Length: 336
Image (cartoon, rainbow, N blue to C red; front, top):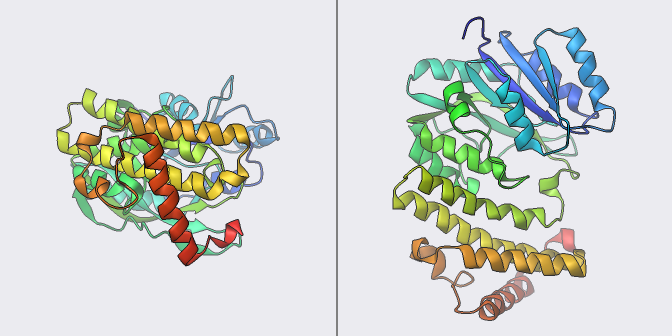
């Protein structure tokens, strides 16, 4: 691609006038200057759009895509990627920002390993208090196979999806919009699987924790998001991945179903009567969708994760176990 920048940074933007300047400035201030910044406005209504117009005038590397309707971050990211030109592509949340050398470190990692198609940033979290802490999932793993990266990323125990990928990989595996908030997790995991090798770098991605973000609110989204595992299974089957990969996904799905009921148990008093019914229906539907024959025995034959023959027995075991658990250790302070 002639005259293409090294990296395209795509930011889906919606009503973020408080933090969008820091996000944009962190990109434009990168030590690697051969970049393009594509801001996709998802029909903001708080004045964010005026800030974006300002940056178009200030820096020729900035482009803005104006969405005609609010369709969520995954759709917005795909719209930005469609007009991108970079050899590498990364996405940045509209309230997050990058260390000045983040892109440089990532590009250097690609240069060291020709079969690497994904390079992960370190993630540090900015708390509402202003304190910055290293995320427990440090992404400092060096060089591993794509399959190992996928294994570690399921449940996000050791790897997060903050990364730069090759253009070819991003175009082949666009953002999954199966679930508006958490569908992006599927995208990262599929990209890991499709990359022969995955590397980590010392470039830092700063993730701002906001009480107002969808993923941090007490909401049905935190239950509904686990439906993404069904879409993930379908995509794994369509790509002819072996049964072992399916077993990893299905085991994570089963744990997420149990975790969803745990979440419901803790927060149901904060839900309306209608929301409680919807939450239970979502969990019940997911339970029926899970392919239990693929779930590892270690995931389903233990207290709290037994697959009971009926919905009533399933919920009864969890009600009893969770009541005992919190009787002994007490409820989280945020609920008291």
